[in-house]
Length: 149
Image (cartoon, rainbow, N blue to C red; front, top):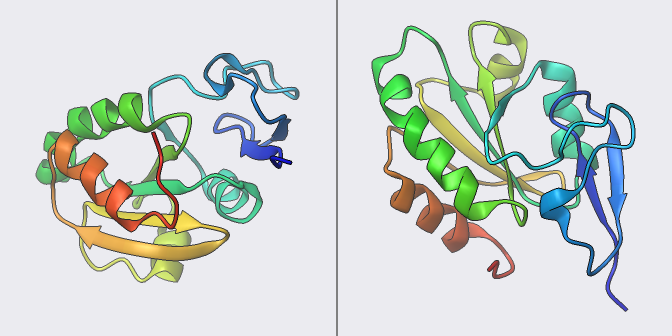
């Protein structure tokens, strides 16, 4: 029997249970009513980031970035395009390293942009430097323990 997915809302941090076979693409948060998957990577705060990593049963990719970073701004459209391709099998979020310095320090961020893939509460893979949408999608799929559509 397939297990339900736990999906954390990137807006409010609420944990939502999605039954097997439910179309997650149209699902809304039971706490705030926002769509769980919008095709747009939300810029989250430290609390929501921690919920995403520790409470979500789906893989989570975080892009650590800063508004002054040229390569970060250059990669933003590619990251958004990758979100459209990977959701709802994988959650993509953004974390502003200037606003969330404690989280960035805890993660050991030395350069940006840095992407980290988490699954089951653990870091699975990490890469730094700007990538195209195709490279992001390939990197995520190459490092997942299970194949995604």
